[in-house]
Every structure is written in C-alpha cells, then in structure tokens.
Length: 160
Length: 158
Image 1 (cartoon, rainbow over the protein chains, first blue to last red):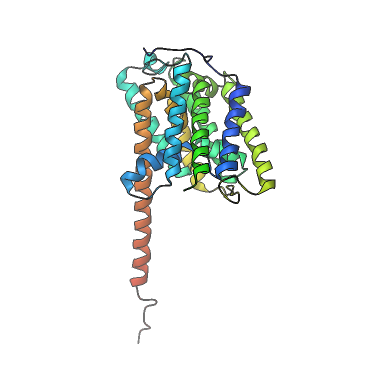
Image 2 (cartoon, one colour; image 1 turned 45 degrees about the vertical axis):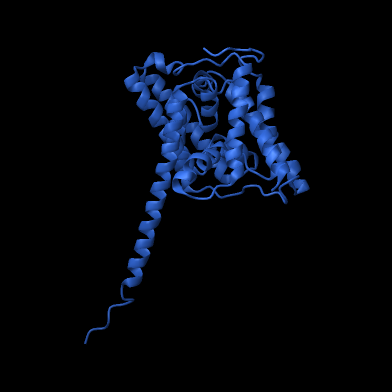
C-alpha cells in the first residue's frame, strides 16, 4: 500500500472535472494548435519506434505529462493503492481475468487505431470541433460499450 | 524550437492526467457503473467537458489563430466506415475492461496492476492494426501491378 496524503476527495465534483477537461482540449488548440488525444500519444511513444516512423515529439511529451499529472493526483488522493482489478478480480478467476483484460486491451488498441482516435481524440477533441468522423465514432463506442457491459452483466448473473 | 507550444503542451498534459485521475476514472467501478447506466457521473463529466471545449473552440474559430501554433486548424473529416467499425471494436474493449487509453494511464498511476495488462493489450492491438493495414496496402499494390501486366485487350482472332 502506497502512503496516501489524501488532500483530494475520492472524486472531484463533475462540474470541476468536466469543464476542466474541456479547458484542456480548448487550451491545447488555442495555445499550441494541437489535438488532444491519448491513443495518438501512445501510438507515437510505444508503437512508432517498433514500426520505425518519425513521430511528432510533442505527442511523446504529452503522454509523459499526462502520466506525471496522473501520479500527482494519485499521490494527493485517497485512490492510490495496489489493486488487481476492482469487481472483476473478485468475480472471475485469474484464468478468466487475464485473457479478458489483455483481450479487452487488444480491442481498445486495434479499434482506436482503426477509428483514428479514442475517447479523448474523438470523444472530447473531435466532438467539440463538431467533426463528423468523431461524432460517429463516439456515438458508436459509447453505444457498443453500454451494450457489452449489459451483456456481460447479464451473462455473469449480476456479478460482472 | 517552439518553447511556448512545448510548455503549454506539457502543462495541459499534466492538468489532463490530474483531472482524469482525480475524477476516479482510473477506477474500474466508476466507468462500469456509468456503462451500466447506474451512475451519471461519467456522462456529466464527459458532457460538460465537450460543452466547455466546444464553447472554447467557437471563440477560437472567431479569432482564427492560436498563441504559439499559427492559424487554427480544427478537424473536420467525413464519417467513414473505419470510424464506425473501429469504434465498435474499441467499444467492446471499453465495455469489457471499463477503461480506455487515457484512463488506463490513470489506473496504472494509482496502482491498478490490471491496467498494465490492458495497456500491453492496447499497444499490441495498435501494432496489429498497423500490420493489417500494411498487408492490405501491399495486397492492393500487388493487385494494381497485376492489372498493369495484363494485355489491355485480347487481340482479335483471324
């Protein structure tokens, strides 16, 4: 268990977090003319070196900065403790949990690259700009995610 | 080269990571409850974020320029099949894991070890999609080359 300072509440109020995230999106455009997106940053930081193409450096720096911010919030908040996976790790044996998480991650990565963006790049940045590809992608992934969650919940007898 | 753009990108990245984590999105339960339509928190955050960002971008559009990045360029791309198909696959992963690329970083940063597995899968999935697209491109190029090699029309008999 990591030492906890607990200066932050478990969850920032939505009216602080939401507009704050919105300002991040608008601010990155207004200051640097850049589209905020985490999957693009992961692609540049981790996949591009393997595929050997030149990345825009700011994407890598952005990912590092996001990590620093996440660590800072973790250290200041009550939520930082070593856990395997809430809910799922109690409902499922490791033999089911591990392939579920890795397979789910695989779908996230494959889908994000195919769709050219994820929850941040399409969901926040693209939707705020009113771009049709982002609106279509966002409507699709939220609808599918809700459907999959309901299906898993039903199949798991309410445990998932 | 462009110190202002660089500094603002880093500052905004830190703020973004802080807010995503401070909102508890690194916790599976937060997103899971929302996707079960039992909690409205995620949708309130997401909706207000898009609303504020859209208002900010509307103001920026009027100005037409950015502080450190020259004339404003906002995305405007038609919705194609790849955005729907890709997002559908992405949504499956989103529903199964209760996390997405940004919140997976928050999950790992707050000690969620399972997030490492999701992130490993995520990177592998991106690589796999890249490989699939490279293969599709080379097959397409091969098909075009084959077409060129064929004679334009069969010669008339007799």
